[in-house]
Length: 278
Image 1 (tube, one colour):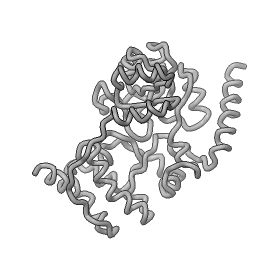
Image 2: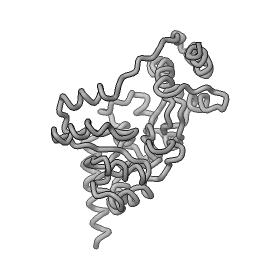
Image 3: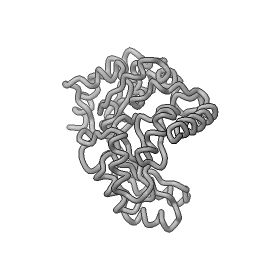
């Protein structure tokens, strides 16, 4: 059976680490898919105030129901063409996600590998072609990045990695601690952790899985496979064996207290912006 043989091929690069941690060797079992429409239905029924999504555009009937229920829709674009497609679909705002961003690339018109535009090139291009608010994302970690994004046409910014380092974040302890170390500045794009292109901190497991001979399962099967190692590695405090999502400005993530960081961020943005218009 091809599924079983693929599992064994992909497991080869992980097996030695899983065994060393004393975790059970994964066994093959068919994957049960979760329909997007079923997930979206939960949001619609709960009438959430904002519905933000990546990897394309929801069916028109879902977007229409959002408008009827006054749910704000925010799509994600990694290229100007994706920004135009999202506006045509009628979304309320667009996240312009540069390739500096941590985590998954949300590309949907072309392969993610062919959609690697930087944030400060992407933002003005999308801002010039759409008439809805543009939210800049990717590599923004301090007041300087916020001011630059606003100057390029964004009406807001989206910051992720910098908040992961905070004590109140949902990231694991070893993830938070790793983000505060100097090696956090070494990030790379890889399909190794989930089967889809994503950015994380370079570590031992990334290097092992990025070898040319390693078999990578399609998403989300690769993610499920790697979780067998991740759960055991986190329990053992092995940061070198855990996927560490992070953007290219991860070494600027010095925040430990969310409230204090936000207060200083607003003050610094005002100070920088004020000095530029004097």
